[in-house]
Amino acid sequence: MKLHDALYGVTRLGFDTSPIIYFVEANPQYDARVTWVFQQVAGGALQGLTSVVTLSEVLVQPLMRGDIRIQQEYRDCCFTAGIFKLFRLITTLRNVPLIYACVTD
Image 1 (cartoon, rainbow, N blue to C red):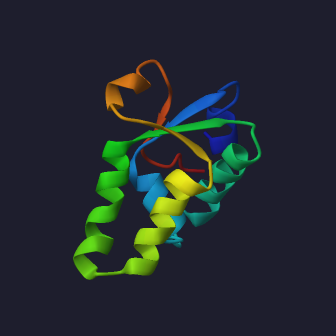
Image 2: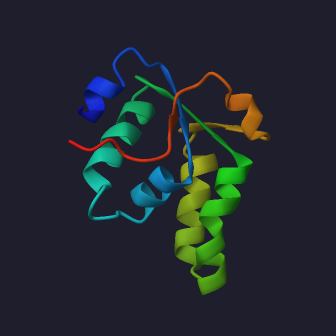
């Protein structure tokens, strides 16, 4: 099933850690797919939801490496850009489709 088809009729989409990492770090295997999803969110076709837990998870490796540039990119993606509605608790995402892995072509 194609990603576009899997998201047909979806208006709110919860983002787990992996897709955010794939997008910010431009993972060569998944970049095109996650970029398309992020474009849908940025364009208003989808409402992106995530939690502070996800933000904490995506920052682990950049903090350990001391990679300030990537740390800021994650913060910009999750806070500054206004792409996501950020929840304090993951349980708030109940009954919302969750993108935790990319759908294969």
